[in-house]
Length: 481
Ligand SMILES: *[C@@H]1O[C@H](CO)[C@@H](O)[C@H](O)[C@H]1NC(C)=O
Ligand SMILES: *[C@@H]1O[C@H](CO)[C@@H](O)[C@H](O)[C@H]1NC(C)=O
Image 1 (cartoon, rainbow, N blue to C red):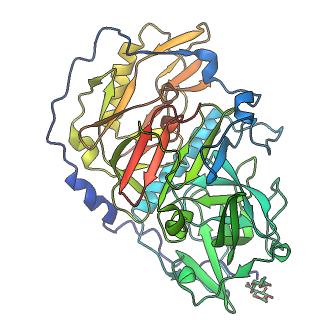
Image 2 (image 1 turned 30 degrees about the vertical axis):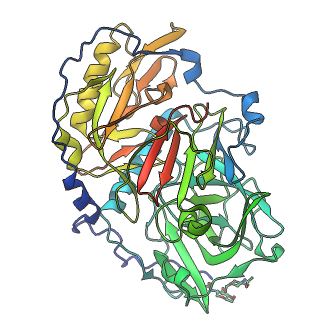
Image 3 (image 1 turned 180 degrees about the vertical axis):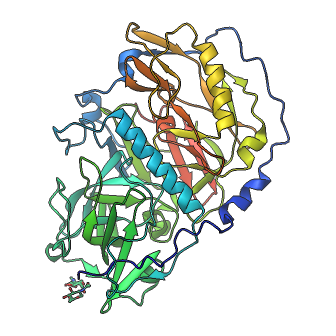
């Protein structure tokens, strides 16, 4: 099966199209523009006090993390891909902060491209087309820093998968790797060793729902190309997915990848798709788990968090905001930003004229540049007692904290829907490039066509609840450490 790649004539990226998803946002005009211009508030208990060392990466897995108790039997432990709690952790060096930030920018570019792309469900490719690069239907992958371990097949084989709210089809590399498999730590999944494995045939709804599909004989072929030129092509398959000894999902549809290219280091066995399309695990388990899931991303690469399917373990202190309609993205309605409880003077239209989404795979929150500049200027005023450090990549506001053991950072809250204010954990305020470059962990979008994205640094330690059935998204403090 050498040639089952896509035709470049499939027009996934039609920039001339009207952005259907954006129509929704024009309704998010906040009538209440009463902004507080007093940015020079006196220093108060509003400030977070953080140990500078706690912001730097750790080389040892926290002992508390090793004995970490998951909230429910439908929970998976979440660890950082490059951190010491990933049992696959390699000795080769993790990507540098500037590489991470460059990949992050590539992911944002691919989100933008997908937002303006044609809704391309149903594109087909045939095995006779001899084109080398698949069309890009997905996002950049190398920023997917959070990994879970699932069991696939019967008997189950453990696989470490990166999880992604920005894409839907779960896939793993599969024997016999007809074209190509990249190096991974887990043994590559072998369908011939699983009694439950079956290929899915072309004439099935599951095949027809794929964004890009093809057929070899009667076997349905899937293809996903990502924004960083990673891709996977293979058979659409089904088998049993095991979350824990008490929780299995029979007839779970996934991609059995026969031609796989993944950029980056510390290779995972594939991807767990938590997106909104039909192929996502969330849609597939809607009867069992009611289209609700939650996760907590650990504060440091040496900690552990969780990904829970269903409504168990959701804290009473979770605050909910409306989740916008979209068949691709988790759309949210950001309306303002607070610094130390002072609302910043940002016109609500700065946000309402653009799409805003939450994404588990974008590292740094992206703001419209007017919003970023206002936040940055106010932040600099509040941080004026600290020496500034060199700017780095996306970051223009960095501090040299190498001579400090503690730092007081102002608190940042995001306002949603015009009235819900959610305070970010202190880990969401400063991003450590090194102790001499601790940077305001936000970035400006380079042009106005980019979406506002709530990234994963700003989600850390919070319990983030995706209630698709209820049309809402929740944030609770102290979900994990
Ligand atoms: C199609 O399937 C046949 C039989 O399994 C196999 O020999 C061939 O390589 C496959 N071709 C493609 C393009 O998948
Ligand atoms: C799945 O389909 C491929 C291609 O048609 C074939 O080579 C392979 O043997 C099939 N696997 C099973 C278990 O039927």
